[in-house]
Image (cartoon, rainbow, N blue to C red; front, side):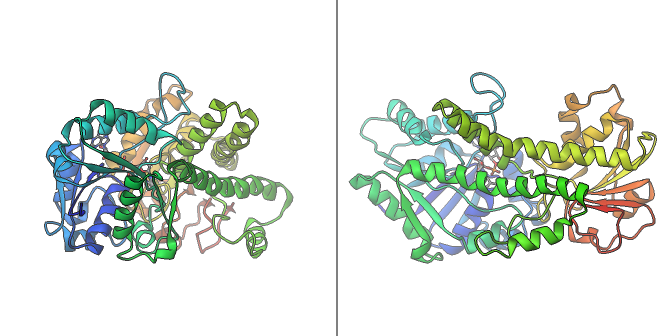
Length: 446
Ligand SMILES: NC(=O)c1ccc[n+]([C@@H]2O[C@H](COP(=O)([O-])OP(=O)(O)OC[C@H]3O[C@@H](n4cnc5c(N)ncnc54)[C@H](O)[C@@H]3O)[C@@H](O)[C@H]2O)c1
């Protein structure tokens, strides 16, 4: 079998950029991204300045390969059947109901993909888990494929977790630290692994392509995210101690990071990590540990999430204290994305800090250069249940069109995302800078 056609189910933050880069690097393979959300597919086929995912460098690649060997389609069944290799890159959020609610990963989208692959496939397929999944999910997928699939068709399951970070997705994909491929140690398993290696080999040095068994690969992704998030929670926990002792976080980070064994990454204090992955992946790990009866291990990792929530509350309380609890004051919130260079606001600390401030009675003027007005509004409305007091939400926030509009209307400015354009802000009003990015003097920085 030669891989001539790839179908990727899920045209989101992972599927979109990853397939764009594979299409660019492998011009002899046709790649089709499919998605159950037709609006997303239309947007991928539409204006290059309004693609569903904002990532530096992405639109240039899409411009180059779209319509040549990269396609976006609503025809899921047809594209599954036409492809030799199928990536599953659908979302795996935290379960909201049933067993494991609030912790375990919700696999309903992955399971529905597996059923659709089983139903639509009339020839052998290599199925690649791109989504982040709890260890041993491949077993479940295999069960579904063998129960629902046609007789005589062979499905090989590979785990190939994605390590890209939003905001730097394209450079991460171009120069991955490592590509991880987990496969069965059977003859057909090894052949499938080699097919995937031959794709990545087009631009990733072989020494960086690591092959493992499926379970190590699945667990390595959860463990990597847990370790990265742990560094953020570690420095954030120490930022609270700096505030009380007069130690400076910047100096502390530098002193710690210069130790080669520790290194400099992820040691900047912040309003807490956001994004769709860290919290859900750690909770998923916590759930797995509990499932296996490892309560102490579960509690160890759970603490990383608890410190993150603590940091968000700490910042909201700091703003409240700075304004002497005068809740008639207006607060300018600069930044809604969970970090710079992305339009993704999933689990952004801005959401939780803003809702806390609204609960305290404040009115917010919010600005972000890439997150749409609509998204900011839905983020707030979808989380209305977190507002503890009775306030008419409509009068409690305004989405601004510019930094100036935000500053002009506010009594205090709260910088929550490290967008470069926030570095130059100048105002006589008090600034609380939770990213240590503002170059002019600020009232408070973390
Ligand atoms: N976002 C990241 O930075 C990142 C990094 C590494 C790994 N991951 C993992 O990758 C996976 C995808 O994350 P994402 O951020 O791209 O999610 P996303 O929500 O941006 O995209 C997922 C897409 O899948 C589609 N979808 C869901 N069920 C479907 C189905 N049955 N058929 C067709 N389409 C379906 C959704 O409509 C959505 O467009 C998750 O498991 C995540 O943990 C994410």
